[in-house]
Each structure stands twice: as C-alpha cells, then as structure tokens.
Image: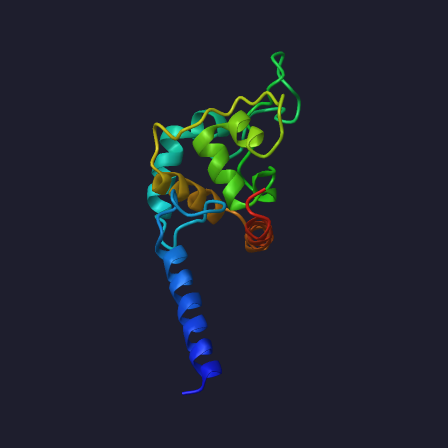
Length: 163
C-alpha cells in the first residue's frame, strides 16, 4: 500500500472514531451545548408539564396574563409556551438550560447579567431526560411551521456552540 493510502485510512478511522465518541457520550460529559436525545416521550412530557410547569405557564400552555409587562419586582410573568409566546424563538440548548438551571443562571452563563427572572431551575427535581420530554411535549403542540423555524434556530445555536 502506498503511504498516501495508509494515511487516508488512518485519518478516516480517526474521524469515524471521534464521531462515534461524541455521539455516544452522555450529554453531561460532551463538550458543547446540550442536544435533545434521539428518543423522547411526549406523553410523559405532558404529564410532567402538568405537574411542574402548568401552575405558572398554564394548563393549555397559555402563560400568565400580561406576560410582557414586568412585575413590581422586575421579573416577567411566565410566558406562554404555545405558538403565541416566544419559547419557539429559542434553540433547544437555551430552553434546556433555562429549565435545568433557571432563567438567571442560564442567561448569566451566556453573558447576560442583571436580568431578573422568575424561572426557577428544575435540575434538582427533574432528570435531563424528563426535561427533554417536557420540551418535546411543548414542541409537539406547535404548528409544523413553528417547529421548523425552531429547528433552524436550534441548528444555528448548535453551530455557534450553544449561545
């Protein structure tokens, strides 16, 4: 075999091995933004949403009244998670981090400080999979056009490293 051919095989092997390691690595150990797992349970997400989210964001994902107007403490009321809100304007990594860490921590990690958020973190109450299931449920309620736009935002976010 020629040296160039051997080099090409070795390089191809390294690329394939590297891709497999990234694909198989648990989400907590891989570099970069969190990525929705290949398998989610929308029905479980609906149950979890009702238990953990509906008290603020509404049983029908409608959010709180006047969700764009700050409360006296500077926090915003809980926004709707249906297509009328802004949830779909964000990529999956931000939505995941916002849910897991809480609003202030997730935004501070992205360089946004001094933002008063009423969104608590659920990382101590929900597993990563449960958070992804809730997000899958929320996204399942959106019209196809909205899901497509949000998927593009997720793809862009992933290419930028989750910011």
